[in-house]
Picture 1 (cartoon, rainbow over the protein chains, first blue to last red):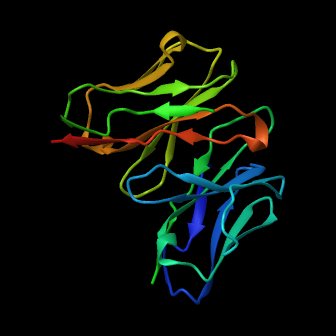
Picture 2 (picture 1 turned 30 degrees about the vertical axis):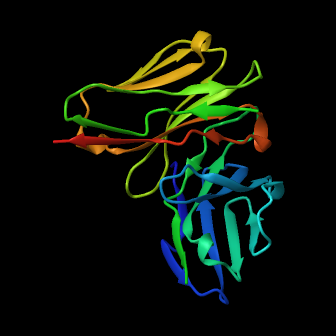
Length: 114
Length: 116
């Protein structure tokens, strides 16, 4: 099973709202990633978790707060977002040891900030 | 610093034509990994292939084939007898690091449209 699931598929939120994006994988991968993708652009890395610890933060604004509760789950908490944060948010996972291995992506959450 | 260039931005072909998507990369490392991903209109990136820098053998998987040439720093992707379902954005990516801190550097992507 090479499936990464993400919920919700679509999210519309106001600039004062707090919401969370969820990602789950059951492939036994110990690295999980959040990407942001704007239309007609490649994905941009936001965060990497390795063995449930944050290993890379690509200078993402603090209004984005990642969390990795266990090896299968990855959350992205959103607060006080700006309209320019509207994008497709992709989660991915991969093996860790002796990599880099291919990353498996979820279908994404299409976020609109109003 | 690593860089991936996909000079073609949009390609349009008629079904059953062969099409080659170009990818040129830059890296200072001797050990690196190259990837191709497909992103259909649904949005999910689909992994197609991973190749390390020590393996220059070309690969064929059904209608897909890849030509890796270190001498020209290229990793091109050919679709034979294209089909409408091949319509998607295709990204070439490079990773120098190993393990959990590996970061993918993506090219800008090539939008392939296959017309019936």
